[in-house]
Image 1 (tube, rainbow, N blue to C red):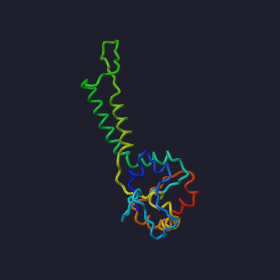
Image 2: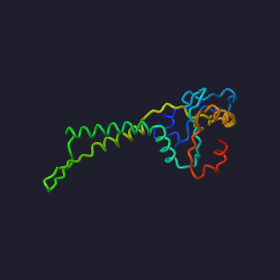
Image 3: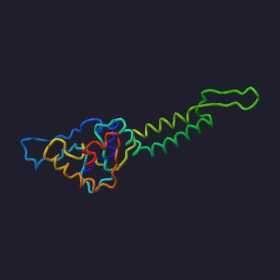
Image 4: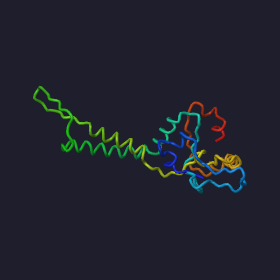
Length: 187
């Protein structure tokens, strides 16, 4: 099972900030019949692009920022550069107004300043960082291992080695406590 990185990072990493809402456990039903519910964020797959190994006790904000920069940083940099160039061009051809002018007293050149390139670039960077939709398939334990049924959850945990074997890359989101956590070391 895998979840798209865009789904895991949606809503500024809501999935990393909150408990997942994987429902479907009915104690009266046979454990063998319980499936992942239709609204489950993960899907069956034959390969996983990236396995996310992290400490749930670590700073959520830090993890989310690292993952947003990893998946959306390059597109954000490209788009912000293009928009900054557009802002500079629109200032130069005086479509966008200058905000202030510096006059020189020695008869030299006057300088006009406008922050449009900076504004366009920063807005473009952060909008793209938060709204870009990366298509990588990732393993995030709370999305890919059933959380409601103890029996199915145990089978998922026992299958961590298979999840790792089918993953192309292991991403370790390091923090000072990472190597002290048995689960993290196990992964």
